Amino acid sequence: MMLPFLASKWWTIVFAAIAAGLILSGTYRVLEKLLAVMVVTFTFVTLTCAVLLQLTPYALTWADFQAGMQFEFPSFAIAAALAAYGGTGVNAGETMAYTYWCTEKGYARFAGAPHGSEEWVRRARGWIRVMHTDVLLTLFMLSLATIPFYMLGAGVLHRMGRVPNGLETISILSNMYTETLGVWAWWLFMVGAFGVLFSTVVSGLGGASRMFADCMAVLGVIDPKDNRARLRVLRIWAVGAPAIMSTC
Image (cartoon, rainbow, N blue to C red; front, side, top):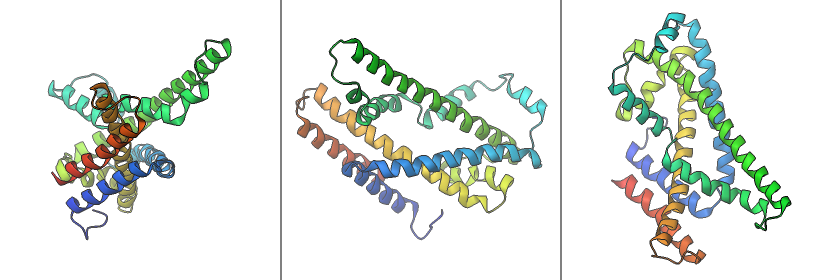
């Protein structure tokens, strides 16, 4: 939508190739920092839009908030809400991938080899606290982003009668920003949406490729102690999965 000189299917293939290249190169650090800035910025803009929403014709009233807390909704909405929540990346795959992230960040290595001393126990508990802090901060950021996003969806999209669907999902969601900040916010939303979605693709592919390699080791296809074989399987998945998914 931002660069329409290529059809969406070709952009899909282009970014699938870029994601595969990043996983193969192992140079995700720079992109990680860039996308982290984009995601944080996108979250801040979403929060700002939720506040500015009150200055528009779509402003939410106290009665709206009270009605929203009564849990009166159709039964099918429960499954839809859970599906939407899972679609944001908070799911089983993300949880499993997190263990690889902790390992490759060096948490276990910094704790040192387990030898049972009080010093080692202290270091290990220290790094476990780091993970606890990470999870709590993630919960805070998710809440900070999700609640305003729901407010914008209810305040703008519901009243406009616009339902995100298919390839029009992004353009419809952009109304939450353009209706509160102005038409210029379309580009702001698009850049932020790209950062959120592409970071999910790259991190998801990185986690899935590592899980697939470990799966082959558990099934006895490769030797669990053979790091070369594990790396080879990881690379096969990193190329094969996006190639198949982007061309289907």
